[in-house]
Length: 118
Image (cartoon, rainbow, N blue to C red; front, side):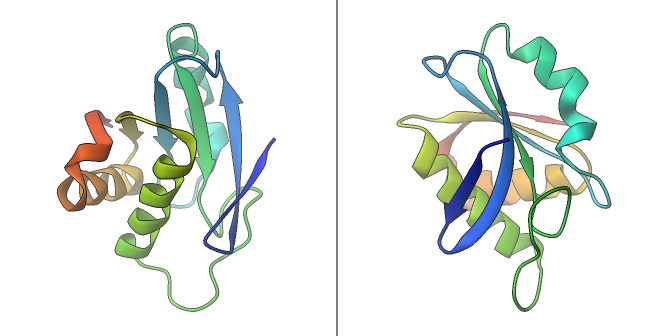
């Protein structure tokens, strides 16, 4: 599981599919981890480069220092997108991951080609 450092925050990500394909960022819900997105990422990885995120405080990612909020998660995802992709991505968000995805799309729509909200 690769570890990324985004603005000083460590996040762990499960990657599947060819790195040369369009990126899909999968964002799990509250009290979950990237593991919850594995059935979806296995299917999508046949067509996309899937990155299933362990949000800070979940799975293998250490928590944020200080307050945890949806806008803070969204800022982290925006910075991740800018780090891993040179074009718009597809966001797949479950529950809280959908709230984070929506926040990213509202605040920086050029980063998001489309969303799947579960």
